[in-house]
Length: 446
Picture 1 (cartoon, rainbow, N blue to C red):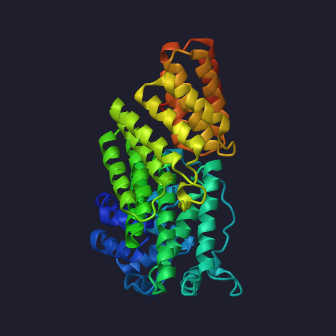
Picture 2: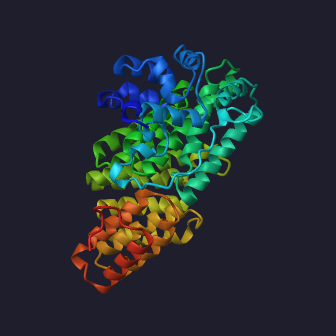
Picture 3: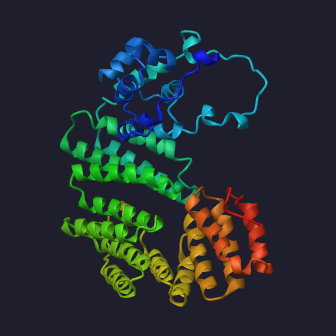
């Protein structure tokens, strides 16, 4: 393509504008196109040409009469307007790669685009209209259950493999449900859709949090909070605030973390039917915040409250599905981690070790994460051989799950080995770490 015809990048000021960021995140292309016109001088006819759309279609989008949902169209918009892939929930686009890193490939025969093929094939752009029609179909309680079952499956696969590969599917379903909310439906169905959308937004935020992409995570957690607020689901609002509190401990913002978990507890206490399991989980998150702040008395008090609440759990309690993961092994391991964060390694080690023996072995991320914490408490006590052996055991489940959070912890453990770097056990761990989790630039040094 001649340089004169090559799409120009949007102004940096527009790409970093909160309104543009939000419009791209929710794929509100009416706003995206209007901003491209007013802020970059890219008029609808130019948008149509760049994105391989018809001018009338662009006009309908700007007027709010049409939504663009098909992935092929969204990718063409990203490429035509030079919007970085991550802003639209897409993979990194080929043009984002620095020219020096691009490998020139042999020319291949041109394959006609779907719209250029025989009329018998389905033109890609028309899929938008079909999806819009499908979204107007009637929904039932069974439909809501199907959505909830898919969310449970997403969580299960997230535990086993990580959320990076799942995120496009989760985002697609989230946007589909948000689209369904725009139509008038019976209150039971509408409230159910709001709850499902909130769960999908939280799950999306979690996948970004687990990838250590904290700004994106916070944006989706905030969206989940707003959706739950629409139906006054205070228990779920507490759940989302607890997620944001946990993220605060990772971002070294313990005061924010404590404020968020306190707000979560307030929401849970004000809700009807909040179960002891929910309150126990929230107390443990409070313990994490106090531990990072270094407050021993407050950490111990929160741990005591978590165990007190857990002891009140009765068979048949109406626990929300999102808190059922918080079983006894999880309570025990989180208690150990709270002690570990506080620097009480001798207390933490047996708790984490006991929970590791008892927890679900299919949850690869949890196994790797908890083994890291066990290794850290062992290292804090000077048990170098045990610590390196435990950390090495964590590498296999860590390699099975796409979780930058877990990988980052294991690289942090390597950094903590600095005083012992020449010891045989440390060298063996380093070799295995390099083999299983290839180094990220700047994180591992011989």
